[in-house]
Length: 200
Length: 244
Image 1 (spheres, each protein chain N blue to C red):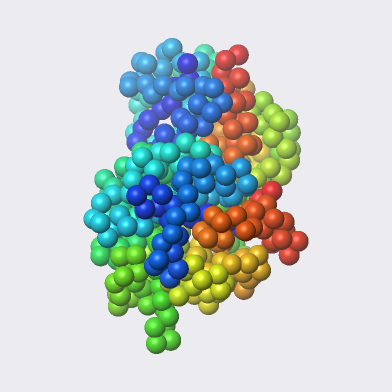
Image 2: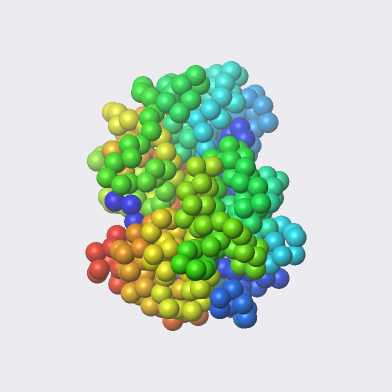
């Protein structure tokens, strides 16, 4: 059972459909207590970091406890940013803090447009469970203005004005800045990899 | 490097894909879900479903069509036509749209863009602008090109982005369905260029001369004259970055 957290800022239909395509039906827990039975947790999200304030309190604590028990956690887009300590987009809102660092706005260099919208290529510097089978330079779909810093947890990077963390993996904590559910074959491969991790 | 995007537009009426010339004389081009599936397999980067008569008929875009199309796609899907309120946008997004395109309703009330982007993020809000050359300027038309407005297309594009639109889809009414090429003068200020695609070189031109991030076309894809893969090969040989 993989839980899909609905905090009002997700494109739940697309995420659920993406997981269904790789054989996993996600459930949406009504309360944090419903997370107890989950073998994996997905935090989706689009929009402003401030939206993650809906996770403050019992959701955050329950997710943190589940991660502590070894339950795999996948953050998608805003969900990846939420794994960090916070974001300049909403400085008063704390993230989960599972990864050190703060998300910041992409620079508007060289006539590049922000938000960063479209298909861009991944640089995959090291093997990871999440990106298993995803080739170097695979193209995936991004749509965001803020991005996470490159840290030791970074499993893939991307460049748009600056190099940022496109995917992270640290033990049972996973995240992708792009939308795997909208990234055609490489994206579905990533969802399948997460499902395999969750199913042990 | 960010790839240039190719977007297939499905103009839908009564559940069928239709295509006209200069916004008129619509003819049948097939089933939306079947076309979406084909494009997805051929490597299209994004799909737009436009309910071309929704605004004129005063109703929402067909949720059943959106659902059918989105079930075939694991690439971004934008939906437009008849989206006037946050509830209309919510219905489209719940049915599987990743982005909503607003046109006439944003002209009538530009704060709609701000409200939608506050709720869904600017990445989910596309302002669609239909423009025609009138007396040396690009005049905006609303209601599927039927109603002139006093607005200038470039000024409106800039204002719409400030108000919360993440992308600007600009269609040249003069070029729509003509296959005479994109209007590159019109498209230099916008992200998605639309109207007039007929040959591979038209796409090269709109990316290099028109500086568009994405090019949208309908007829050129629907009637299968040019496979998406061949077009991408052509662009790649011209040094234009596209997704493999």
